[in-house]
Length: 134
Image (cartoon, rainbow, N blue to C red; front, side, top):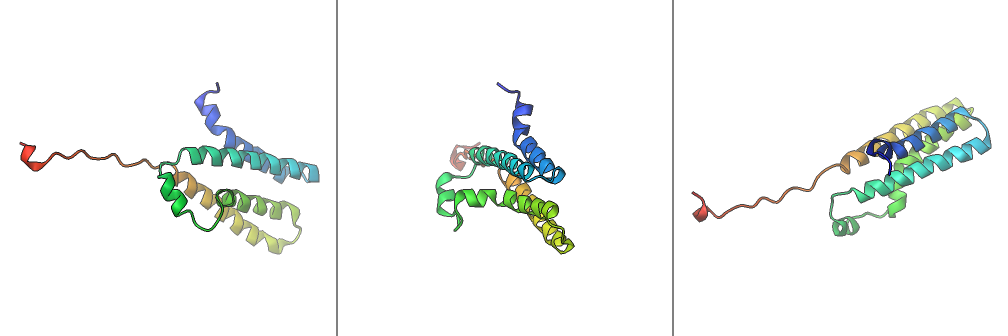
């Protein structure tokens, strides 16, 4: 079994390595492999994140919204990947502002999702009736 610190950093390492490949190498084969590595890291992160959610599953399914589960969960990664592809694959400087906006939105969504998944369920308070107190 892997140590907890190594186990927890695997999805982030996959995403960082895949992004570095996307930004560093300008071959179509490198782009495809970088996309696959980022996608693998994103899937690992989504599966772990969904397993650690503390909200009630029935409420999550009832108020899930119009988007399918995997499409919704992959949105931050899709925004970031499209932004990286615009940065590396485009020679037109007019694409850079939209790529930067997409990158910021992707990172913001990812940070929001990770912060929402760390909350704890409230502990029920066991209150005694007033006549028994004292």
